Image (tube, rainbow over all chains, first blue to last red; front, top):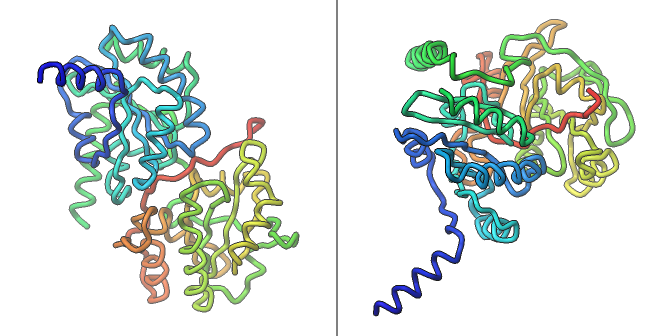
Length: 157
Length: 210
């Protein structure tokens, strides 16, 4: 029994986290967590070319800041029925950051809650630390230098 | 409606309070309801140029910035065709415009626009905004992005900006047909409510040189 459990544990450790489908209210809960972590929420999709091109920068951030209170969450806006495709993509690209798929519902009801200035185009990135009221939004893509500069600036707040 | 204004006011106030840490890199510009829209002259898939002024019998237009490659645009193709079928005869034809940089997205080239329009049997003009100036002036940021215009005298007045409806993924699950409601209102002599909505879409790929 114990052996089976350790085996299960080993298997689950070896594999990347499964991608869960979350609702907007679940995403909001994450945004409202009052801990010391700066969350970098990147809205992307497998079909979105500029999004896919900037993913390595977010991966690099995850790697470089693994000992710092920074957490990257890649929120896929692929359609829900494309979940297997997203999973395959994440495995193929060996993505280490957390990935979730957002069940979109009616985007008109939540886009403003992410940021009133967001037009709804992706890529888009939200930096948030609810504890200190840090909230910064960027529509468009990033190069690593600008992304890191933004993170470093927000970490001082 | 009052509640909406109150909420908007509150969020504006909150945004102002948080402005130290909460700021935007991309301020929203472009048309909103009530603005006067410019006409344009763009090349259609039949190689002829189309201007809104050419469509003299129209009462207004459903201008939709869209493209070939974007899954959101593709998901809406049949609904865009249906919009034109329903509203062209009522005086509000669809005019589709592809503003994407074909260098970035070869799928969105003028040649591929012709192919797609033929495959889907588009009943409306599908224009190429090669210079991207119309998309920029209108303030289109994503595809699909709808601008409902109404002719008032010699002016084209913006009446609705936003999404086609509230569910891009599943046409059968749509609850709010925003664009249709906007035009239905205009046909009844009313203003469009809401006159602005948001949707997730593919960002328009701007040319590097601009």
